Image 1 (cartoon, one colour):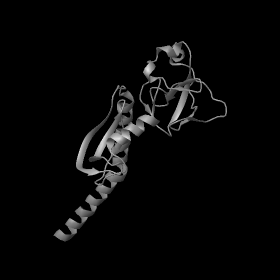
Image 2 (cartoon, helix red, strand yellow; image 1 turned 180 degrees about the vertical axis):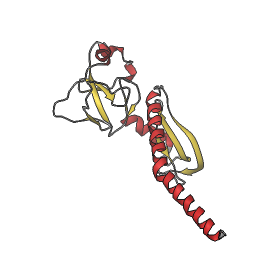
Image 3 (spheres, rainbow, N blue to C red; image 1 turned 90 degrees about the vertical axis):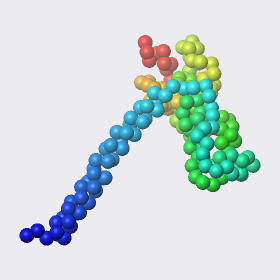
Image 4 (cartoon, one colour; image 1 turned 45 degrees about the horizontal axis):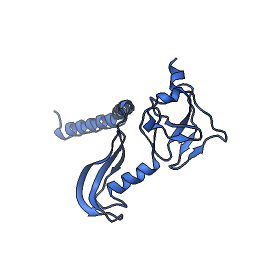
Length: 188
């Protein structure tokens, strides 16, 4: 009455169609929701006062900088992982040399204290009595103001991009820099 080959073929085709529908219709929405949740959690991470190389894994090898170190590692700057070295071969530099170079070119946001890396869009907060509430160690003076990032908690109404941080200077977005209101002005 039922041919087992036809029944199995129909079941296999139905399974493949269901798997493809799941992969291309359901899975992307789950991934998008998970990505949004990770971004919200990342914005909620508080800044720390430590910079470190951690999660050392893999074999030890001589890097081109001359140091012998693990081939896989991560670098955390002030509460966020900024560098994740993966792979099985030695790289240009070891974790300590990369951390030292990152510390040379990054600055801290005057609002949240997290790292501002080269190429990142930034704002400049005008120096004034309200800015005195920021921790002194977070203040990176640039063009008469202080450097701030445009991540979720630091980006607010009235803030505009002033330019890009280039590691040693501010690449202006406009010929004349626009100072943004201070956080105290947003709250009141």
